[in-house]
Amino acid sequence: MSSIFSKIVAGEIPCHKIAEDDHFLAFLDIFPLVKGHTLVIPKKEVDYIFDLDGDVLSGILNFSKPVAKAIESVIPCERIGVTVIGLEVPHAHVHLIPINSVGDMNFMKPKLKLEQEELTQIAEKIRTAI
Image (cartoon, rainbow, N blue to C red; front, side, top):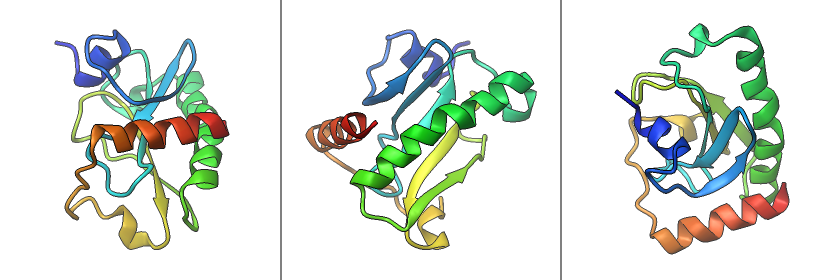
């Protein structure tokens, strides 16, 4: 059974795309902790990040770097926090989260409910900054 992320990769579910290449996709989290919260996934569906081939595991961070720099340039923050939890969707992924303190990465906090138009605008700003 395909994960929601595989359906996004296949174009079956829309997303607010930030960046894409042959192996990876970055898109805004639609239930973000903060504005600019972005997910980076390998296009190949693998549940657990440490089950990824070594090249894919290192590649996800290399792909994430310019995305993180772009987020940081358009979303006011101290830096971009990186986290991997891996329980919420059975498809390896990295969270890139604009943070000013470690508390900004607390996944127990209520998620933001942003309008689609605002997500579209945020994605465009980040894409433009890459």
